[in-house]
Image 1 (tube, one colour):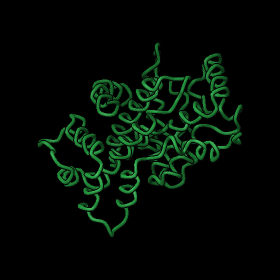
Image 2 (image 1 turned 90 degrees about the horizontal axis):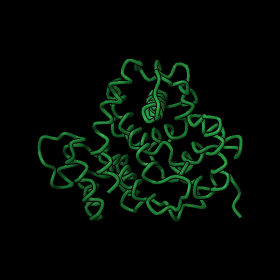
Image 3 (image 1 turned 135 degrees about the vertical axis):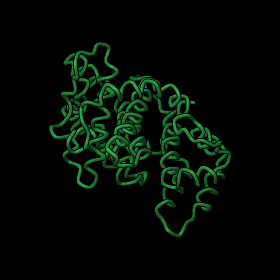
Image 4 (image 1 turned 90 degrees about the vertical axis):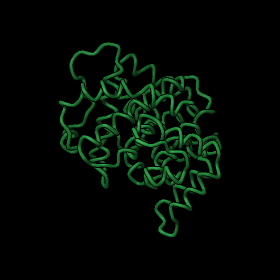
Length: 284
């Protein structure tokens, strides 16, 4: 019987959610000056299914490139190695979690929420001129990944948590109920997974503190953007919306992110227009 700690849960599910070898290698190579763009391209090309997914994403309206991207080397030339690494991580993560048994939430619901958050984070970060659009898309995409592990490894407790959140109408504070019942929450589990996967430090911090951005040490602005993105995602997908119910936001989050509340409605409209295309990219 496993002990219920974030580390034990991640270790207990590592065989089911290991990143593909090509993705792990690319993640290591991007930040290593010994490797060139050609070296990275060769690793991507060695995985046919990954190559197909990357070219499909690069040629989608999501990027709006003027010329067709027909080779991995062309994709690297246009997008750059760091941005391509982020796409590889996003694509691989979605595929990695396909086979995890889960009776508490449909994968369609989970990934719709996650993709919506990822697109929102990408738009917000472009608005505040911070750059790192693809990195923040991945952070938004993976922000709740710890929940999938909890659903799989702690189904009884997870069911209690979900029921209590519905009774108290505090779905946005689900992580607080997780802390009450488990002694930790999905952000702790997600952070442990991203650490084990050796994902970029910015992504690790965004996953770890997306509910509590004031705790971010190294990337406070990026974390604040993902924090706001997930709040907007929850707000946008409520059945009934009356006013800007973003009470889950930490005080000072807008200022830290360098953003204004005035962009909420326009951002939601733009995301809803884009999500069918992005959903098709990552769910097929």
